[in-house]
Length: 66
Image (cartoon, rainbow, N blue to C red; front, side, top):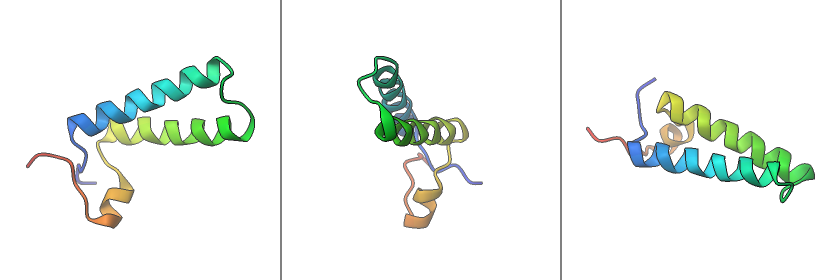
């Protein structure tokens, strides 16, 4: 796995995941939407930890500085 995510991209993903987590905890998001948003948030955190986004690879994108 070659890194393809820059620092700004990782920070944005973690912040979005944190906001979604707060919305779910505050019961603003519930039901199916909360489940889907929670799974996407977990994927955001995981991709941020590994600095690798499989979708970026498929699209030929990279936000990582060389």
